[in-house]
Image 1: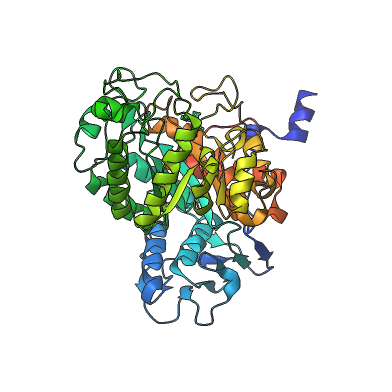
Image 2: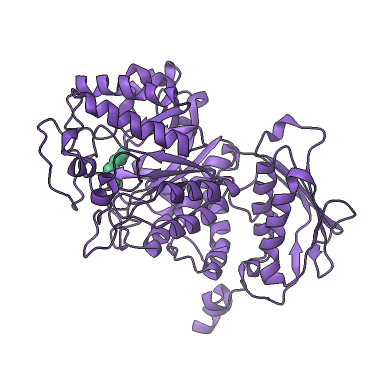
Length: 510
Ligand code: TNX
């Protein structure tokens, strides 16, 4: 009987890995039409052709493929090529700035887009159409085939984000860069950096040096783990690194709550002028800027002006969450003064959904983190013009535990297994907020429990892939079984890159 059972079910250890097909990609493309033609195979004589602004993306494609293939893969401006990247002469508006078309037949690959961002998105698709061994850092013997067919693809939402909290545990620039590498593979195009909170202040601000000398402390870390901060030059370098991967940095300084670290450094930012004690616990809601003092607004404006100057992206996030120690009228008055400062320095204000209480939020982006789907203030703000990014804590929070037994993470918003992270529609989530007001979706990773980069990876992957698909793929393609199977096949790619992902029991991993 045991033999028969093995014959029927196969044995998990010996099942051949699923073949890579045109349908293997995460996030699933908008349109996929496989053809019966034989696949295209990259060989030692394959040439890549790209000119002008397509060139940097072609160079990146070549650099991506060289280590595992061992092929030279020269990039040339003209000539007959097996792989051609081209920016459209006849712009098709359907593709927008980030869409692309990929035509693969036996003789070659043609990748077209209106803008370099679209070519970059197409590059990520090509990478996933190759065998998983393409992720190896040394030469592998493989048939480097790409299945034949046509993919036409573009994002559902303009904003597809991830957030990393550098305040509760600092994560050094090298780790942030690894994270950017990983998220850009899933066509995530915004990285929100939570740069200050009660336990730490992580970005140098000229004129306020004690913010980082005092506020660069251990966060919620014990025995010194978790300290550090970014110099402005390190921040600029991260912005550039991200931009090279078509990821835009969104900086956040949280106010008027979540400011204990700033007040430890500058006691004049409290109402009584007395420095509070440094905090390493994970409680929230106890600190507030003194909304009646002018120095509060000088401080806020200094921070906003400098961050705006350092940040080429359109958004500047001012937090605004959980200000339980700020009286409501003072909170609204504070937001009415500081939200417009962001526009004064050329950026769009962004804040957690509590800012919807202030009329000035009509010009802002509102990040919806509630676990309830009814927020009248958000509905009103959206009606007045605000855009909404969906990050419901019970679906999109990467710091929630997968289940109560997985190490790391919190569970105040519940536990979030992969299917829970995947099976919801950002379009209709916040009741009364019209689909047209939804700018996109973001998966925040708070770092109270994250001691090192391995912990970051474990919380983020695979759930970030689910959120990326919600942000990119059309709702009509939404299908848990399909996603689950594509994710299972993707596991080998993470394994080869050494990514410490959570092997969810909901998924059959390759
Ligand atoms: C709530 S949700 C917070 C953060 C915590 C997080 C932990 C929100 C905007 N604020 O201060 O880090 O919960 O899950």
